Amino acid sequence: MASAKPSAAIKIDHLPFGFFEREIAAFFHQFGSVVRVRIPRCKKSGRDRGYAFVLFEDSTVAQVAMEAMDGYLMFEKRLQVTLLDEDNVPEILKKGAKMIGQPSKGASGRAHSKKMNKKKSDDEDNKAKVRRNKIQSKRMKKLAAMGIDYDMDGEKKIDTTEVTVVENEIEQIDEPVAKKSKTVGKKSNESDAIVIESTPSKTISTPGKRKTPAVTKSTPKTPLSAKTPPLKSRLRSARR
Image (cartoon, rainbow, N blue to C red):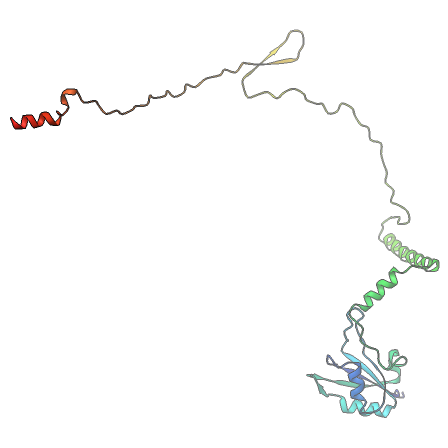
């Protein structure tokens, strides 16, 4: 079995962060002319997947670049470079510009929303209906295989049964609620209805506290005889 013919493309694994399209093209230009550089990226975030492809004009230049850069330490990453066969060259290296810039964050989401929100033509609506019908038929087959009988074409049918409303089912009670006071029930001779008579409640008045008269303290009046004599009479008695 003949071996595959080597191509002019190489694959670089363990790609360090920051070593992107421009840096790769400038760095590998020392080995020969670079035709294209491709770095596969995530569609949602735009971050690289850790490997890249480089296409040279000559296969001998690619062989020299692979031998020189395989195991090369760059930014704490040891590069792993392999030479691709012609059968393993990806399609993104066969056509297009030399470099494709890094997409901005959220660019794929904005493009998808723009595509979904644009006004569709009649042909596009018909194609969408055909796709939905195919998906729906597959789901119906799965449900039938599981033993579930369900119709998704029309609206869900509900079996309605006639409901008879019985009048006077709920009796309204207008009688007052009996109090906690003692009641005596008496049956009247004319009808069997119970007549509720409430005994008059006795009002018991609790005697209030008697007010005690206010005691006013007054100083006792001294009699006239107990008064001290005036100053003149005292002086006269002292002379005698």
